[in-house]
Image 1: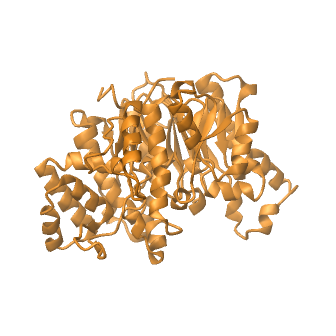
Image 2: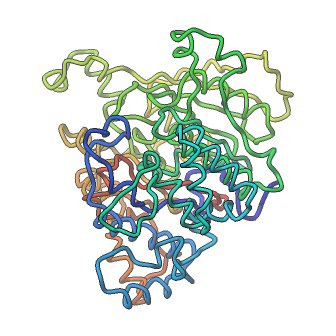
Image 3: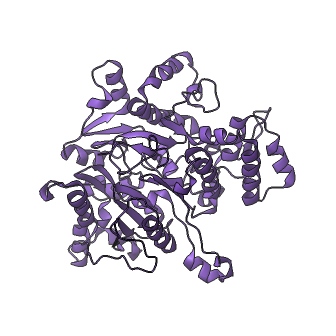
Length: 501
């Protein structure tokens, strides 16, 4: 098994031990309104404030995953009093915290770029997909420092002696902070994403090099790639659109040791879903159950992790638009307040759920139909089934917490700001955004403590509490700017290692 001591994920809840992140880079601060649609943003962000909020996220991860780095962070905070980005959070700076448990994409890319052969290949590959001139490619090859080059390949901006001048060589990657989408660990395997949009293609390319030449150097057969068939180029434009293969990690959940969830959404196509099912059964991934969840193709719910996430063995957070009760009452026409606010009937498009099952002892057959004749009434039925069957939770103990406490308009508003997109640090302890107040009230009613990240840091520093003793708690981050990027803590994480539950 590859890197068995540092790459293995078998649930969404096991204690987080190793993770890939990416701090907001300079490219995010250069988004212009005319490119919102192309670059998948809805607003500009105040980068300085966004970084401060994200630094709390990184600090929180370090407290739980690598507490030995905290004194270094604290010393850096005291020494650097200006309001610029702290040096200890910059991967190329000598003061960088340099954890082997909380890893930044830029740091990993810089390590790969130390190899001169790989460096030339990466530059050539990036320039090819970005349509750069030979002069630009040569210019990139002349950047000697690997950290500086990594930064250019991510931000798209060349370093300038004149701080008042910005020179783009290609577009930035403002969505790279959402590392969940670039790949997903399935037990000991890594499934690489294939970006749905041109804006994220370079992310997929860079992650491929990191996967093969840093994470799985000696066991490259444990990396799974999903691509179009070899004859895809022969299809006409309409057929290509129908059979396009794209997948993003927000649509894959490693939910239990033998069970993954796969979303079919605006970003993950039916063709990709089909190939994922075959790939996980063909490779010895340990997966026996694949549950496919088809959600409406809408911007507000771009991945399944914007609709629900797992918080504790017996607790889930769910966007109530897909509640079985809501669907049933609408069908019975008992209430229809949504209809007053929208003319788009797709708002109520029901979720479709299909399960595939192949026991580990059965040899994979690409022509076999592994679909199970299981009918789920809706999302709650599926989530309860997972808690009961995969985690042995008594049926009457499963709890569903709803976005905005299922109260209109808070349910819609708070789902938009990622009320359902929580990252579990361990079973029952998860990270959320502070602005989703009604959802937090619902968690409190479900028996959870709500704790601001800053308050938790103070408790840790005063020795009143340790990360090991934190239980049944939702830790909230300031999110005035982070939420503008349209992703929560779950999106901002690529777990590499979790403890077994």
